[in-house]
Length: 240
Ligand code: HEC
Image 1 (tube, rainbow, N blue to C red):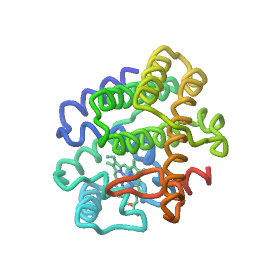
Image 2 (cartoon, rainbow, N blue to C red):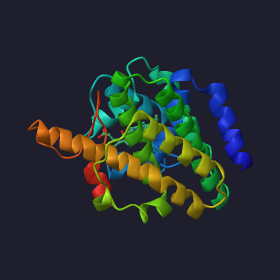
Image 3 (cartoon, rainbow, N blue to C red):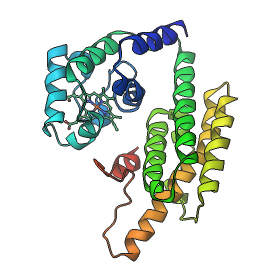
């Protein structure tokens, strides 16, 4: 717990603004201390030195990288200062994230509440033409929840996802309810239960898009991310 607060503070103090918003997102693929092969393909960033990290980031910025470089090109948005980002990633990977198992729950809860809060604010002020972006944000958030939460993974059935007509109000209500629900949880089990309706919401959106693409005669493998820098991640979800 103390470690988390410390980590949060370090990030607040040292991170440039662009990074601040995004750094939490990295854990779903790279692990809390960048100790994993992201999606089974990246190098273990924890084992890289700062120069190597910077070289990788500069690569993504220039559109170069491995088979899944598009994903990281979306992360390393064009304006980012790769010197500062590499230093941050290096420090983050050397600062242990979790001391106790319960820390993982607290971190995940904080991350969820924060992403859902941001989402709620975005939905509130969204105009009709913004809803595509909102849909993409919902799917990204759902992907991060799913990738990171082991308990949730056993509760989600992709084959049950259905197309469903949704209004902006429906979407806002679900996000509000899910956030409130997660806010009041004290165990991974309880949190996963709260997350299921959010996964179903993302599932509705994916199915709606699938149908729309079919109607337009576009060949479709339900994309989970849409918009600029989009990568089809559905195959990774199915493999789990
Ligand atoms: C959706 C999953 C995902 C997220 C989220 C993500 N990454 Fe990655 N990351 C990857 C994948 C996959 C690769 C390997 C890409 C390739 O093929 O070059 C990678 C590669 C990297 C590398 C270079 C490692 C190497 O293999 O050379 C760094 C550094 C990195 N990511 C940092 C970050 C940071 C920092 C964040 C958060 C701001 C982040 N990543 C968010 C999936 C992700």
